[in-house]
Length: 84
Image (tube, rainbow, N blue to C red; front, side, top):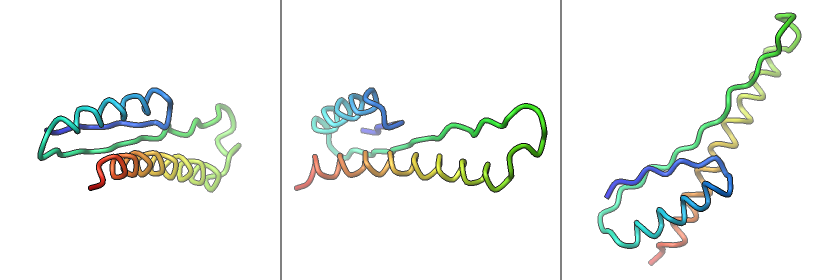
C-alpha cells in the first residue's frame, strides 16, 4: 500500500498520522512518503528595500527547517509505532 502523509505540525495532522498508522497496521509491503511544506515569507508592501535580503532568506530557512522538523517527527512516530 502507498500512503502519503502531509503534516504541518497541527493537531489535525496528528490525527491524520494516527489514522495512517491504523491503515498501515492492516497492510503489508507499505510504502510511505512524508511531506511538509512551509509558507512563503510575506514581503512587505511599500519600499522595495524595507526588509533586507538576509532577513528574507533567514525567514525562508526557518520555514524550511520547521517543515523538515515536522516530517522528521512523523517519521519517528511511525518508526516507534512499528518497531519490531
